[in-house]
Length: 521
Image (cartoon, rainbow, N blue to C red; front, side):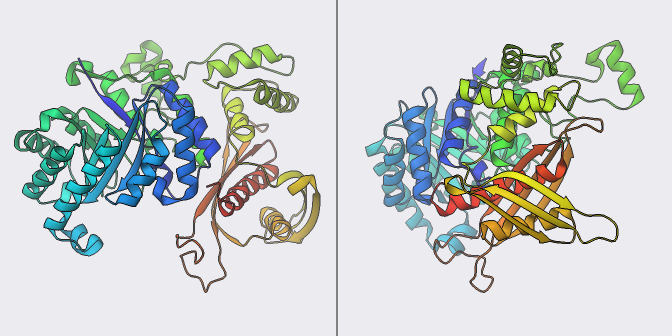
């Protein structure tokens, strides 16, 4: 069978999801997990976007071995220079450059003629190739480009030295039939196409990203660009787990394989969700909480008789195997370490010690600690931003006929403890107002959600929030200091007390906001 190159762009396109902010340390940990997952190419970022992004890509290039490390750049010399600066130390480096080729983009965004786009493509692909042997070229908005012009641009890129030609459905406009035909047309009409790898990059605006990517593969593409959990601009990108498991589950149909270690899919999904703060929807294919759950009586009866009646995949294939090892307050460090390894968490001694302490605290409150409980305390302890403020104590007073009031004690910079109180419309609002008085950074709360991790009154509560930086500039959506849009930051917290979990989530998001101002994001 032919082998598909899996190009993961979680750290670049995935991070462009509103709220999916990652600092350099988080990017490094995800990149290391992507190595365990077995991806072929890691698109580590867009170095020209910010000094922080350049720093993160450069660090990944130096510290992460195995996959090709790729950096994105516009068809501009300055961008390409920054991309090369970021990846030049990688064992296997790639520069990925792009320029729009649809009439609507060229006219309204680039304000360039077709001739100018062709000239820029020739010059910049050639320049990138003079720096790096592996150059990928993308004609942005290819699916809405005039096809004969698209062929021209691709031929120019090939002649200038591009080694991979990536065809993006940038706005998720194509249907599978159209996109497959586009790839087939490129293979038939672009001179020299056999000398390059043909790639696809599809967005999910119409819910067709995976279908379009697979249609492209069937038409002859041999690289798929995708993200863990389908993260990405707007509705997201083609989901890595969906692409890989489609090939795995239907080998007779696709006659294609990948180098992905499927048992690392679920741990990778959890890590990305925890670091970005973007939870996976319950009915998400492959890795959603309900993907292997059955409630209907007919389905349950069929599953009990033969799992193949209603399951086309074994949950253990993606790393969801359930152990019979039950953890409780009498369980030791070794049992916890084994369980965490089984769940796909590879922790060092320091992190294991932190987890063991938190595990014992939880085990004192619950008779049995479920796998889901462990996963959520791992995310609460390990997958958090650098600590500027930390929750120390929370006390609330509320109830029918009373004024909700909260007193908060945070550990701040240099280990100094700060206490403040405030009131609000409810206990969480009062607590957040008290935290705001301490931290003093204006923001808007744009999303707040609570999820019970397991069943029962002693369940751990998992809180996810999103905040948007607030600027004193007349309500402008653009930061006047950086020229960037006001960014959204997510936060995550977990505790058997949902008020405490809410405080942790809010402080987590605030720490990211503070980190962004310090250049960490």
